[in-house]
Length: 414
Figure (tube, rainbow, N blue to C red):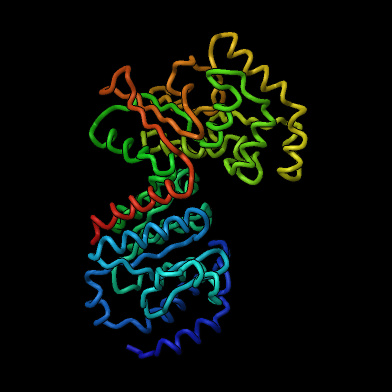
């Protein structure tokens, strides 16, 4: 094998223009992965693989809100579990990366600051996958982003033996072909893929549904409030007791408290809920093509869809308060409250997202704050559904789901 010193490899990396940015997969040169393999693998020796038998490498893409919470939990996990040794070998944001070509661990102490100070740019994804696949021990890739580009690379990563844990909804709610490619690659290579936090943050929604299906129960219906933002809005706007505030004021309040996206329309269009239902419907056995292949009710007035900014939208929203007041009044006249829900009727293969009326005593109506609630109707549970309820948003609880998935993978590969 050609011997290349780590310092020489780093010089080569610094001089390689292909390592300057993450570009869409469709624009990448196929030869770049070959080049990366030669560069990265040059410093790997057989004895290194022997020394890493009781070691698992962790690679992280995304160090934002959820990513920072996950790093804190990972550090605590590594301290609690001395075996296998968990070593961070790669971490990146969209602009910076931190890794050592010889796979020597990146210290978890102060890693956020070290990453911010790094002068390394993240290599293109195929090169990152080549690097990780050549590691002298098994690797778990943690994707803490909501990037479609990263999601599109899952089949390649899994086919190279990299296990994946992630809260990224786009990987599992995108095209049905991507869904199939992901799980086919995992089954073929033996790599693991878990995505508990893609629905319900840290709530055990996906694992519960998988257990129901895998143990032979027949799921007939799934219904619930799947958005912490929508839960907060309607619990405040149409409470079971009292009148609630004006719709536009509640939306502004939700944004000020950090419950909405920077542009609230990204929550009000219903697509986030549609993505989650797409994932659950597929796990229940329905070949749903995409989040736009079934009815999704948007709460954005058509007149405001063209607003250039979220602030402009909020400024003009009060003029449309009466529409929501009429919706609330219609529910109150029937002795009910209105909620934004998603439902999957497995028997009729009907999936939909939108406003529904519920009796004030119904579990969906009596939610508090930004809680989620998901009801599984099955043959075994009969008329009393299995209900999961709790915080469905937030960095710590979302990261908890990712960490839980990491532990599951470790139990199978270490």
